[in-house]
Length: 209
Image (cartoon, rainbow, N blue to C red; front, top):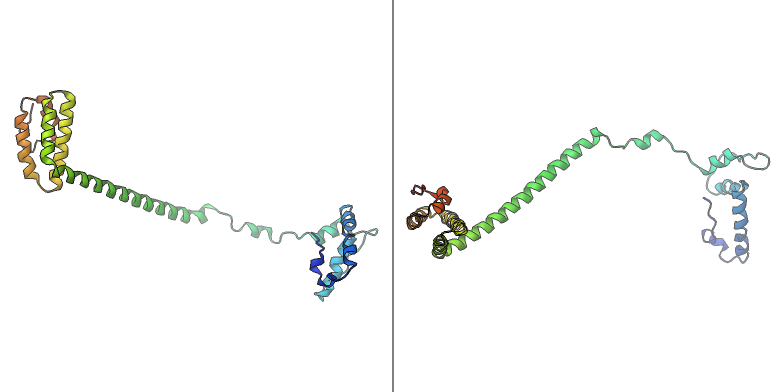
């Protein structure tokens, strides 16, 4: 691409004829499009300003540069094309990065899982603390549900007692739970369906059907 601009030549800033000269650029562009490559001599002549050793003046063919000469002057072929592909990815190159990425991904997943487990543990501990604080009330509610003598009542009573068991155990009060549990079983010894739901919490109590 050839670019001609007054800004590139400060000497033309105060030249009143400079604008007239640049009006001819359109004509020169048209000549290039039509295949008249003589304008490229400007490039060759301009090289004398900065380079002492330049190539010989381009030869004309019937008053024109040949197409091959013009292309050679205006286009640089890629040097060492094979070298352009030396950074292509392949299994050998990328495998260490894949392994590193997988390891990092697993570590991040483990960290996320650990945080989730910590949050769940904290939430469960808070629930156990609240249940233990209100343990007398929860025992009463379990008994109320048991007296309903229906499947939904037994299910709720079982959930309450299991939650009480977790709360007592989290506070290290296993013996205290056993005493209250024995009393609960004794109060509901005729409710076989309920006792069946509580067999996992027997702790030595006779809750067989």
